[in-house]
Image 1 (cartoon, rainbow, N blue to C red):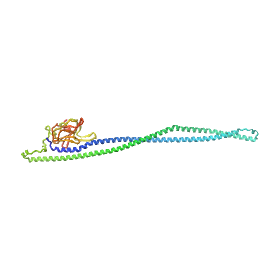
Image 2: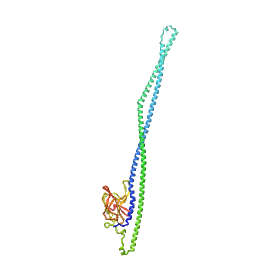
Image 3: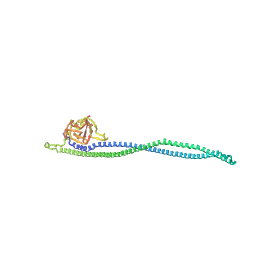
Image 4: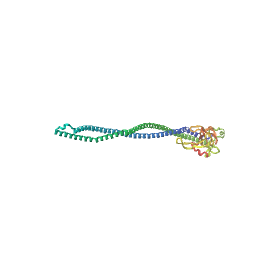
Length: 435
């Protein structure tokens, strides 16, 4: 038995909505996954850049600290050189003064010996000399003795100064030896180690900075790619909204057309009641094959209309509901989507049964839903079975519980899609199916 023909225009409105919307919905999750992967990579690169930036700052602080320390050691080594020169000046001055004292002392000693000889000289001529000459000689001897004593005292007074100068020279030479053999080698070695460390840190800083710049360029590239993906997602969403708007407008147009046809049909019925045909003519008139049956003759399974079966419809195939009716969050992209029906997880190859009697309105492939069977029931109700390898054909009458196909799936588990619609309204199947 054929369903009322007024169901057919709305079915095509459904198809008009399925075909353009399904591709956009099919690619949006993948686009969101790619964008999410880019965001993850971008966050990883930002963390690496932050780590490299901290490493750069640490290296810069280390290099600056070591350079300050190096300057301090430069000053220390310069002070060593200055102290060595100053000590050498003291040694040279002491040597010069000692040499002068030695030369002066030697001159005094020579004169002292002459005076001593003069003071102690004896001659046989002294016996024959005159008294005056004798007095003169004695005076000269006394004078020579006095000079000799003065010279001796002068020589003796130079000894402490010589000892003082010798001690100063010894002290400065020991001071020089300590600087040259103890202090300078250690500080010079420390300075060289710091110079080597600074060189190594500067090389590491150059490598780190190059890596840092590469990461910055990588971030810029990832940001550019992410913007392109986000623009693409925005464009897909814009196209989807336009397509949904177009779908709603088309549905409104078809609904208005259906109402107009319904009004024309009712008007024709009223005119037929006012002007009944001749019974003989009515018997000989051949019925039109495509004429819709009266709306008062619904398709029922057990004498009840489709609305009367609410809450008692059998399941197309028992299983686990993995996607509910209405809004849900798509797990891969974490975005909200809307399902017009339910998805049920079952074993692949399970038989799918019609929930009520009706007529096959469509059997074929619908993008986004795969192979699909749509069955028309009375009062503009439709049931939709997606991802089903159909075994029925269009216009075929279906009884309640009849197998219409098998669940499609290459693996052990699969799922099928099921919807219940009245006119343009999608209904929650769980409120219609038996518990």
